[in-house]
Length: 250
Image (tube, rainbow, N blue to C red):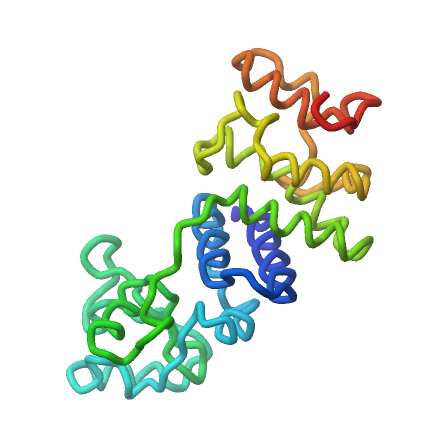
């Protein structure tokens, strides 16, 4: 059973980031999809594909522009009438995770790939992508992306309180599962972590009750037996729902 909550989180976050200017959309999108990929999720690029193409994170080319089109013409043409299909490194062989993974996909009209992917690198090497399009996404910590989302969501108002509540429940996992460079021990002094928590407390997004997967807030009584630093972090992070205090730094 897939963890669809992470897919919903990514989709909603991409849609919100698309409304922002002056940010590195490609790198933030790449970070979100890498974070999502750490969980049991499926292929989710199609749900916000128009945004990803517009922001130059996904590149769409004609099927016959595949660098190995003549070599694999029969296999590639066989997918033309399909609505969706993964395209393997060697389309004439069976899928294999290491030796023959999916490196692109057919969206029903175009062959598509993400910035930084193997297929994208091939297009760059062959001079098909140049300038900014030939630069890979920059590494960004998912907590920094979440902080950008949280601050903007708080400015936008009630419409995005639910998204804030999702990040409120999910953000600790980035720290505790090693998916962020941030540590629970120093969380209270981290500006990005504080921005997320402040946005949640300012909008009172923690008052929204989510009853789906990891969007559910943890119960305080289930946190016993954790390392002291983890317990201290969670007591502070979830103070708005575990106690009457929501003051920054308490």
